[in-house]
Length: 311
Ligand code: RBF
Ligand code: MG
Image 1: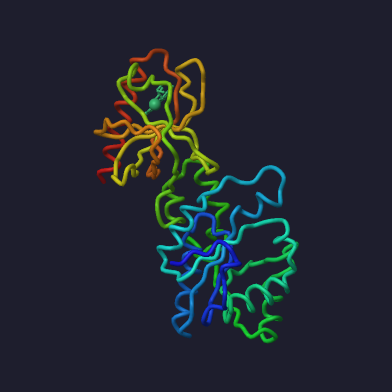
Image 2: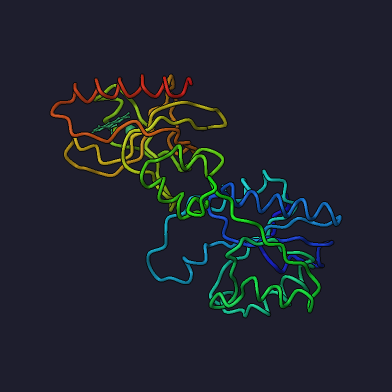
């Protein structure tokens, strides 16, 4: 997949461009279905399959405060879109100026003239452009004028029920509630966070005999506090482990941490990048009245996680 993150680097229109546009937060199975429709349409007309997305996420630019945490930051999003075998990812640096573009200017000047769009694949509720004035009816009106086809893809649902539509909002709620297996079904993969290993309180290894890698999260969605069976990757090597997200209430300072105890592992990985896949939530965090009860419980968690991960 070719990645273009600057529109000035598009020197000529793509051949028979088939395009889908969105934030694609999570690159869930609904998004994946859109990409496959784009790829198939492009194959039929000997064209180029293109996904267009935005970074930063438009709501971060347009809303002053309070945007939902993201399921996928740009790096992972680009990686997941690449796996679908889309030919080109165009990432638009989203600015207020870009947001002010009218729907017609966006379609005519950018999509048709610059990119060479011959077909656009959109979900049923697609809207775009300044004040979201563009929608499917608008696209259908422009289609004959500017010479492209509009393909509306059905929502992907988990069941036949309308309420069972897959959406990034639902996945955020599932993750925030620790319902990792349900999130996994909608994502088509495990929910993953990425971060850097930072130095912790040095309490896990020394006091409890259970070392943990503390992870510095950026702006991603964090699963509900609690204990989880996890897998992951660090230094290109796969691992299994158990994660704790929360405040370690047994201790005084109640500092929020995301930490992973990696099985059969003792390397120094401070500063390294780590990926963590959340497989299943095991329990809530508990305040223990003494450290040896905490250690006993963590040993049980490790056994439970090993069992879950061996299945
Ligand atoms: N701390 C608590 O206060 N209560 C817990 O229930 C608890 N469960 C944990 C489970 C696992 C699998 C791990 C790795 C840690 C847990 N911790 C818990 C956090 C523990 O106190 C922390 O790792 C050490 O204090 C080191 O920072
Ligand atoms: Mg630690």
